[in-house]
Length: 259
Ligand code: IPE
Ligand code: IPE
Ligand code: MG
Image (cartoon, rainbow, N blue to C red; front, side, top):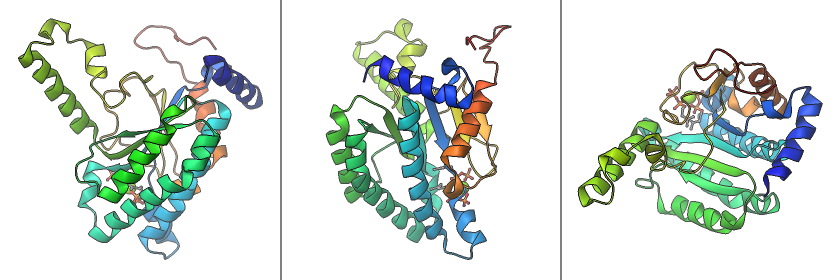
């Protein structure tokens, strides 16, 4: 999809929200948190919260397509989440696989390309199959990129990149002098992507929980108390309007972004 098609959508969105089209983030990364608490508040098992959270994922992904977002990265399962009870982990693996199968027609209709961030090891075969098939069929799409951080950890991602770079140096295909920021970026799962402009975390927690540590060094952070299953397109737009009001100085003394 050409840059102007994203731009057109962003212009319509900006007009509606009363902000500049330049102030709409190109890449939104979301730490979707609070499924368990949502269920607990209703006296339901935690897995009901995940089920409801899956529905919110569909609605938010669709909305991001509509408003002209270029990259949406969703933190759906961290490497640290394996510490959870086996029953919950198994449920999540099946839920994510079913989600991937269910959304394929929408991804194709909306020209969305799905990509995986995280390690493959430890993920069950049925989930890897669902992931691979979805990545393969959406590989032809050139609209929004939907990054699914699944079995993902930022420290692990950086460690893998360091190892890959070291191997190239040992083989002599790369020299230490060639290692700069773009070399490191190009060895991450997000190689070639724009860095996130806006990181949203639901359920009020003020931490990053091992999410995209390299890529978000200058992202704006937005936290809402809303629990993920209740997160709506209106809430997302509130975050975008808040983002639009931020001064991104990147170390300089004035904002870098034209308003
Ligand atoms: C987020 O909700 C989903 C995952 C981490 C898989 P949680 O399951 O962390 O919900 P809370 O934080 O316990 O409420
Ligand atoms: C972060 O949520 C990971 C995901 C959203 C997948 P957690 O619920 O696992 O984070 P902590 O444990 O509260 O830091
Ligand atoms: Mg949580």
